Every structure is written in structure tokens, then in C-alpha cells.
Image (cartoon, rainbow, N blue to C red; front, side):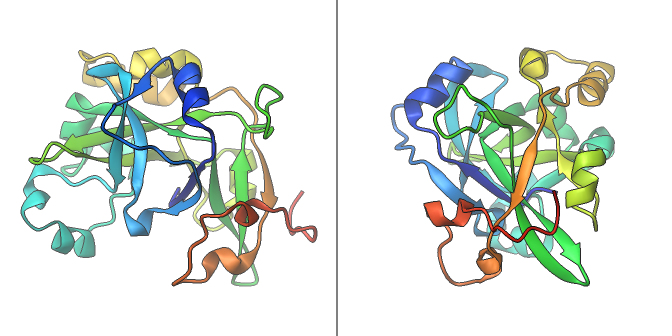
Length: 240
């Protein structure tokens, strides 16, 4: 699962890494933490516009849910979509076939459970290429275009590998992080169902993740967690 994400990189670094530019009308601001349940904007690159970065509300809204988005969100959680059943889902299959995207990030948060207590872990790809030591990456995603010209999106998930099964030890899911070498494939506009399945089964990143525990203050509601302190490592870890 992936319900909380970060993107602390500056605009220039994102544009250089993905070889795409933010649309001029959008004022991107880096964030240390966003929760999907607050329906923030994530940054996406669409298959039909691969050289532009667009904002998209986290939580895909299909065309039939657009008339009453508030009621739709109360009934459905579309922050994540299972990659294994994507093409069989009435909710997601149209977007999977027609509206594929990648969703930009540099970290995300997952819960580790010990004696029914959740401990948040910050997950990232270590990299010496970036000053903060964390690489940019992209979630495999799908999106919808709303009548007002804005977009909404979902992060695809898959069964956890050995590393993430140890962290996310209750649900044992993980976001489907797309390898850089597969981004172009996923963003092709004319993929068949079999080709979509092939990419989904092959595209998980070859880069190694790391993770560390952060403060359980992350779970306090009613306050903003979008500050550098939320990424501070807690010295007494339950893992690693």
C-alpha cells in the first residue's frame, strides 16, 4: 500500500531527471509529507504528454464518480490500485488502457506492526547523485481527466518483495516503483492488454531501497506533517 508520500526535490532537479517540464500554470512546491486521505496534488507525467509534468489529485475519480466527488470518496478508496487485477477492475480498466502515467516521488511512508502498534518507516532509494542522499523515482500510475480539465490519479501496488514484506508486515503490499528503463514502455499510447500485463510484471525497479523508522507523531491527526522534522530518523528502530 502507499498512502503517504514525499517529494522534497526542487523543480530544476525533477525536470532534469525526468526530461520534462512543469506546466507553466502550476506553482510546484516541494513537500516532506502528504497524506492521500487529504487528496493533495501529486506530480504526474502522462502517456499522451510525456514531456510535461502535471498536477493530479491523489485518488482517481472515474467519469461516473465526477458528478459528486465527495460522495464518491466516502464510498471508494482509490489512492491505490492493485496491478494484478487492473484490467479486470470496473474502476480502473479504462484508465489502464487509455490513461497511463508515472507519478513522481523521492520517498514514501509504510507502517510496521509490532504487538498491534504501528511504527512508521520512511522508504527511499539511496543515491550519491543527490545532495540529500535520496534518489528520485516514479510510481507506476493511472489517471483520469475531469470535466474541468484537471486530473486525478492512483498509485499501482503489487505484492511486497522480501524487503517490503518485512516493513509492511501486515498487508504485505508495496507501491509498484517503475524502473527508469521501463518508463518509456509504460507511457506508450497504444499498448494492448497483453503488453500492459507484460510491463506490469516486469517493470519493478532494480534499484535497492532503504528505510528507517520515523516518529509516531506521523499518526497524529489535525496537524501538518509537512516539515523536515518528519523525516528525522528515530534512533531506536524496530527493524534493521
